[in-house]
Length: 91
Image 1 (cartoon, one colour):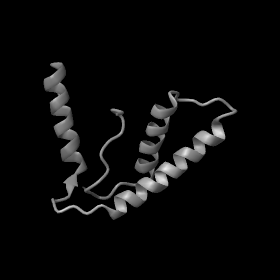
Image 2: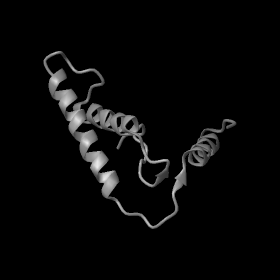
Image 3: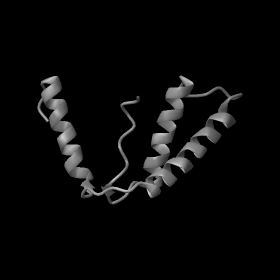
């Protein structure tokens, strides 16, 4: 869907409300087809972001995983290594 939305489940420490909000914002931007809504649509845009962030937080609270928690720094290093290999640049 959107490359800027990162997985938020099963991390230690858990996803923050800022991370959930950022993912909701990216989702609404993608669906709306704009990064900055017009003044006429700002309220609807903001309401959608708030509602999606709220539902996402509930989803993350309710998900059950049996795997070990992932470390954010380790996952970021893996992503940088994949990008370096893919694009032929040093990490």
